[in-house]
Image 1 (cartoon, one colour):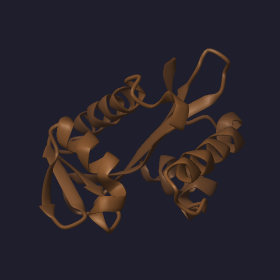
Image 2 (cartoon, one colour):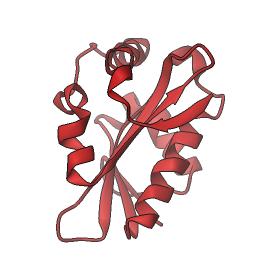
Image 3 (cartoon, helix red, strand yellow):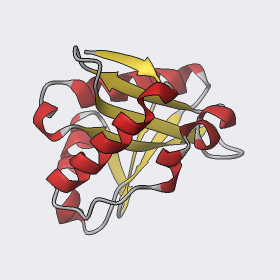
Amino acid sequence: MRIIPYDRAYRDDMIFMVLQAKDALGRKPGLNEDLLSIEDHYIQCGDGFWLAIDGNDRVVGCIGYSSIPNTTEAFLHRLFVKAEKKHQGIGTKLLYVAENAMKKAGKSVSRVHLGSPKEQWFESYAFYEKNGYVEYEPRYMEKKL
């Protein structure tokens, strides 16, 4: 498995993976608008987006971040891992790559916006907490980088 900066050649595979991941969580598979144009929402803004690619050249995970204007902070977005690939360290590797990129960009705090209710997002809360994030208000977690 390798982590690469977003490559448009993987766009459709990434979208399919995200829809599958949402379905596996019991959520209605819908697509967030930013995933339709990673270039416009992340890359051209000077932010980042990465894909986890398996040995069969398929997308098995993704993560992105967007800077919070006029601050040294950024939000993490769209951390998804294909359901059957969870608990293999892919999410942690994606998070590590995004955090390191934010540090290099001078971001001192990473924030995560989580869904509501908290019980529906127990996996996300547990994952981020395990990786040093703390809840600072309902539905939001942060970590000083």
